[in-house]
Length: 615
Image 1 (cartoon, rainbow, N blue to C red):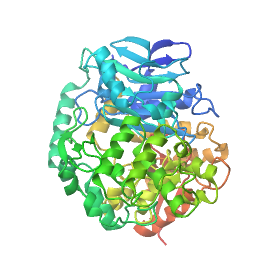
Image 2: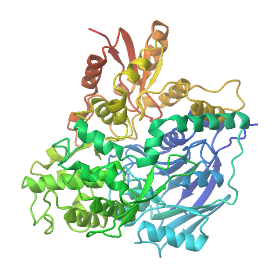
Image 3: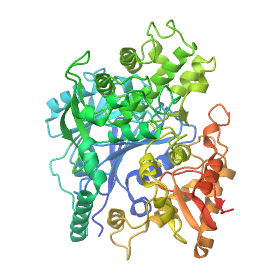
């Protein structure tokens, strides 16, 4: 009998009904958990054409099979929905302890449906579920919300909640647990559209029973030893992601003044050594030895006393490079304010940078900005704009729609300055100097995400890691946040083994990719892709299986869509994947190899097979 019998909780807020379901074993075997479960259920249950902020949309909270098990750094939680920012499939990942607590409470997934008539929160405790009144919490920020819920239910609970930005349907509102966020894509706005303020989890027993317990202990020791030997882990433990500030500025890929420039004057003033001077302590997520979170407190200046777990690299860029400011206190204050309001710092900073360049170019004026002088270096205006966006006040109401919609509303050529892919604002890496990372932007299923084709691989690894892996004849290549991964990782093997305990052998990651790919013939949640384009995915897989013995390579990437169009039907200039593949061929001089592009995890999606040949 398989001890891994994951359950989901289905909460229909319209009818105020709660039902527990067992996730079928065939789904477990095919999709394992985490993102696989989420996208499978979203695709299966969400009708094409569903409006993201309507009661018909679904909000799925999910964890992987290793959450809460003691495996190091595996207890993150993921939110999957149809994004109000991009209009298509989205997933956003959060940290802290919430994912582990879900597992302790006996759940693998929560599916939120409908819309409550009044503000509510969901309470979970060891198989007992309630929908409770949240009227007193509505309008409160994320700090006060979590504090009040812990007063009601005890300090042992864990909370995921939204702030005022989510309530007011800011299209890039986030969901917070502690000070960790499922930040991108407007998942908090979807939660707010359902009048759901929070999910509260109490777990009286904090233990997970596992098959193959002895093997699991060996793998944890292997993982721990690898962590301690890895200099990059030690680096993240020391300074978090702040080392990227120096690297990106030196390499000229630190987007400055709305991506006009690649380096910020006097960037040394916001470098890791400067933040170290105001660091209070380290902080991390559940059973994670990295402890990459850093608590900072501003000692002097206009923001003296401002304190938060962060900012990390992306947030520093968002409120430094975007507005050409090097004030550390302002970055901490901006980060704190965004977390309190419950809003994505990347989209917020990018959108503010968009407003600054429009102001500089005379496309908007003081009359449009309600008197705010959006001049470069003016961090006070940026702080005020965060408040107005998070509360949808004045000009902030326009910017709360995100750069793509705001540009359409403003007009006057503003569209040329909106830095996004598929509606998701670009993060803090300039793809003109990081072409592999740019490929990650354009092939990502969610838009301009920094977690797909991660730029540090390009900066630090050069060409070697890619060539070594992709040239394995008949091989499986993973283009993911770590650029290249091969089907040999111990915890991938263990996770798959947990999900398929009773079978004679564990499912392989390649087989998992095939299972996920079976959904790719359908359109992506009614977003407008046609059956002819979708059928290319099937051809790619068949072609690879036929030619694998001749050395063909299966290239697993998140999402390659050719000739795509935006919601108004205009060609999207950022999605010319064919040109990217040609650049890739030229840069790495691949030998005579048939390369098939295919999905990894993110489905239903559409893929294009390509032939890469050395000329």
